[in-house]
Length: 193
Ligand SMILES: [Zn+2]
Picture 1 (spheres, protein in one colour):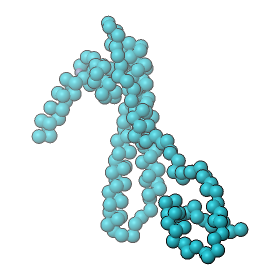
Picture 2 (tube, protein in one colour):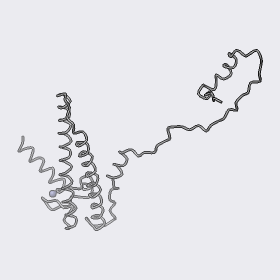
Picture 3 (tube, protein in one colour):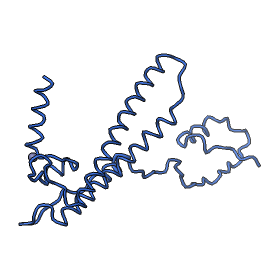
Picture 4 (spheres, protein in one colour):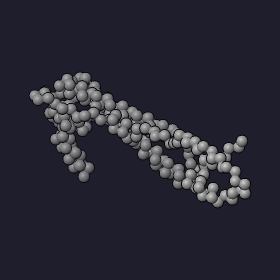
């Protein structure tokens, strides 16, 4: 027996269709096929995917350090905290660099259209600059980690003062206190202006 694919037609039309159908003279008892309610399988199963942004955030964030009362500056715990911050940041940057590298490699084909080529070159130049910045930052992070090991981290290279936890939290690779940094910037402006 050929199974009619009635299932495909809409359920609501069933009655109308029966009515419209010109009934044969001989009324044979209409055998209603038992309506099998097949479990509705939805093709679109919900995919639980983490957005890349969330992953990146989790990776690059460590809760700011909470110093205990009377805790001395650059205590062992504090140093450990900054090592973790620096390492995590480095890892994040290395991931970013790898992404840039993959992108440059996979999109390396050249376009025939000069306009396309120009915009591609611009894009690549931008990515290379980003990569270069990331590379320099990674090397700075390495220096900072080394300074922590040498017990030399967190002190201003110009005046010897504390750089401060707050500033280091915002810029873990800072080598100068905010005063010296500001002074440097003013001097630089005067030189260039
Ligand atoms: Zn200073």
